[in-house]
Length: 247
Ligand code: ADP
Ligand code: MG
Image 1 (tube, rainbow, N blue to C red):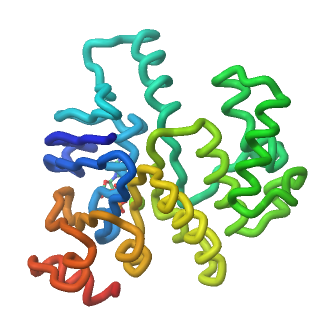
Image 2: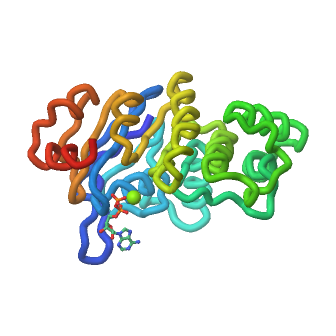
């Protein structure tokens, strides 16, 4: 569903991704862990072209994301189409403050897919129900807790019926007691076989939920494998060191 081949990304002189290879098969969950500054967010943002890569290839469901051959409007059309197939959830919720919870969820299907309001509201209510917030449909984001906001953000991302969901530290800005309600929603998606690429600082969650785990440091994938192995018997010194501090 998602493939990265030898992806490089530089910010000026700083090479942040140094040849990343990654495959997320349909229905699988990949977790990426690693120290701050190792390039995890840049990697995720590259997948939906929020960062423009310098070299390599990124494919979504077989379609090339980076298309140096397309310019201007043609590229914009292409990337909008690609992005409609990806849902992204960030550390900070980025909900629209002037829209109700329901309108936050229905905005994209209405504007981007031209879905009729009635149908969009029905879909929106289904999604709010799925994240346990049907009773908050008319409430504005300022009245929600952090965990509730993040669950709305997940419902909003799901509203475009994406092929893959990208999570960048979705729970790291939350008070500890609010983390589990968001994790529960993500586990629910896992049970429904949503394809997911998850950057997380929560090792126990990554170990429980993922099919494959990758440890990044300094812009490279240092070590990867089934979580049962990566977390219990890491082979590389850098992985061992990181896990000894974070498990
Ligand atoms: P992580 O998510 O693992 O903490 P990031 O991908 O955010 O790491 O950042 C990797 C490196 O790239 C860091 O050194 C960061 O300072 C740098 N970086 C990220 N975004 C930019 C940017 N827009 N301009 C310059 N440097 C950046
Ligand atoms: Mg980050």
